Structure formats: C-alpha cells, structure tokens
Image (cartoon, rainbow, N blue to C red):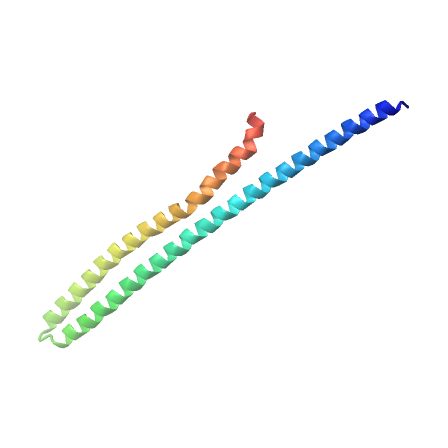
Length: 141
C-alpha cells in the first residue's frame, strides 16, 4: 500500500470525524438552547398562573368579606323591624342583593380566569410555534 494514499485516507477520515463532531456539538447546543427556552416559557406561564390565582383568591375573599358584612348589617336591621312584613321585605331585598352581587362577582371572576388562562398560554404557544418551525424547517428546505 502506498504511504501517500494511506495518509490521504487518514486525512479525509480525520476531517470527516471532525466535521461530524462539530455537527453533533452544534446539534447538542441547539437542542440545549431549545430545551432551556421551553423551560423558560413554562416558568413564565407558571408565574402568570400564580399571580392570576392570587388575584382571583383575593377577589373571592373580598366578595366573601363583603357578604359577611352585609349579613351582619341585615341581622342588625332585622332586630329593629316592627312587623312581619318589614322582616319579609328586608329578607327579600337582602336575598336579591346577594344574588345580584354573586352573579356580578362570578361573571367578573370568570372573565379574569379566562384572561389568566389565555395570558398563561401565550409563552407556551409561542414556544410551540418555534418548536414546530424547527422540526419542519429541515423537511421544507
């Protein structure tokens, strides 16, 4: 065997190995960055959910507190009624007011829940779009 051809084969093999190693390293870096960005999106989404849950919890607690105050006021008012008709009217007004307030607060909180869910999904949806582009980009090229 000719030493020059052996050296040439060895040189070509070394170049191919180095190129393959560089490609593997580059692919590893890309996958690592992709995973880090995906994780960052999950963290951002979780933070949005946590803040939203806190906000919703405070809204429900405020509503419950207000309802308790209204009930205490109604109880005091009931003590001062002079007729059964006054008591019935007071109870009716209280029940109607509580129901209307409950519907209004429930609607407001439901809208907040939907907004928080949409906001929390934004970082994940953005990452999904990037991931899909990365997956199908080589196929389209």
